[in-house]
Image (cartoon, rainbow, N blue to C red; front, top):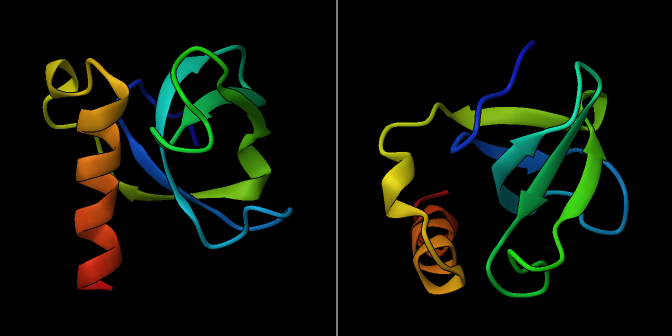
Length: 82
């Protein structure tokens, strides 16, 4: 599966398992960069293998993810729903 910038994903493995992230870049077909606005900020995103994440929501408005606060606010809404 090809992930796009702005997609919301959930980690399936690692110490961050079951946490939500926003895709901020695609490195190649196997790796993406993700951030959550709190522990993984835009300045220091996490490199993640695409096999270790699952798609939660496709990108709708990537312009809304311009800073760490907007990312954290959006992901915080997911935690309350699920």
